[in-house]
Length: 217
Image (tube, rainbow, N blue to C red):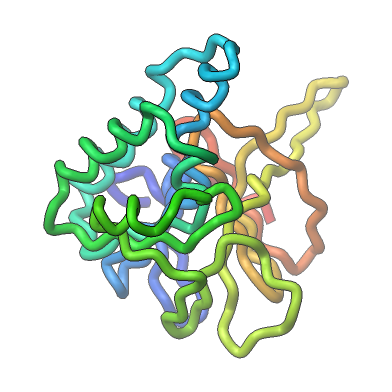
């Protein structure tokens, strides 16, 4: 266990740290990796007349800022769905936040909700790619359907793991899912749900609690 309450784990010869902030730190590359921030989702719902607390997304950016200050990564990699849907006022918050870290390389693997034109991301100094190959990993937004030479790591699904109590109690925790063929990271954004996945005995599944990450299988 390290000072960030993350869980250190060696996988495919790489030193990883699974963080309770629902982020992955790849120590060998000094890279911080997050999936499904969904910045702008609150503004999207507010434009439709649905009252959602605006502070929710600002809190997500504050958590991300704390991780950057603590870990001092060389690169911040977003595995898709950084900004949810069309343009709204939340984009200005994202731009202001980006200006806080002018020397940090930020790469966006485009997700299905990242529908803004590349010119907006480029103006904010985000590098936009369809996927990213960094051995031994292939970083994508959605899980891959074909076997690949590199080990795929994605988001999109918002994975969770269902835990049952002795009675009828149950809770679904966000999870890091490392299966035989690929890994799926939990959604970083608070304004997202969790999808309970089915796992095999050989899968490595990590549940995310408030202040720590625990290995469940």
